Length: 273
Image (cartoon, rainbow, N blue to C red; front, side):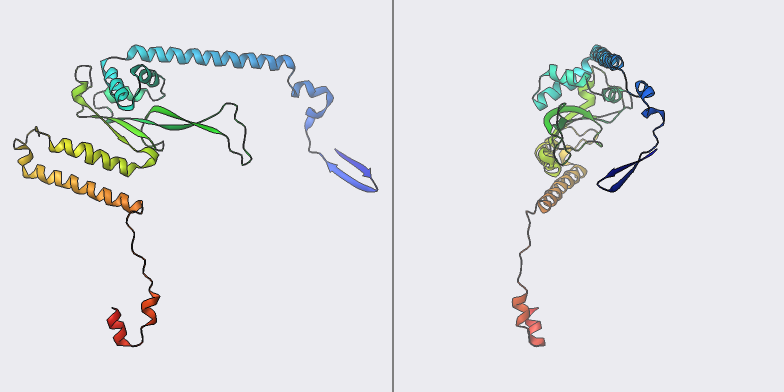
């Protein structure tokens, strides 16, 4: 449709796009929902939330019923390591979307590692208003969660469980088949956290190890000594790399112009060299 308006002698012409029957008075009731329909949708939305909460509760209780000695071992190690109660850790685990990774870790020939991150996680306020730049106000809160280690940025503490064999993990052998460790990478200092973990925990443990399996000589064995030397060298290299990245090693700045101005003939070049 086309309409023309005259104002102060000027012609203003506007064109509207075709909206079909939606713009006619007779069809407004089909385009705009009636108040009763709005109320119905709100009720349905409320019922959906209640149903979702009900399903979540059922899932958590099902998982809680599956917890046995194996899970208790993991829970107790995590609680000791990150200063949370075992009840808190249990509630976190059964509420985690990746709960099935624990079962895959226990299975025969299952996952070789099980990782937990404990770090600040940004959470958007439910009633947050947009800032002028389009961003929103976020709250940072410490959170413990299961992870594969490849999808989230690592900025806090990593608690890890490692399997020593492909045997099924049971309540009776979990303490022998599963090793637990942690390293701290607060503020994203992963190299520093790894260096501390190796130098202060792993190397002292290895050097005090008495039983080396089939190697009866233990620490006196030349291969064991070479292995420990290689680990020491790796930690030293790691430390140097970290210091370089942190600009701890700086080359002295030299004012080359002082030397260049005095160069007059070949002998001056030789002297400068």
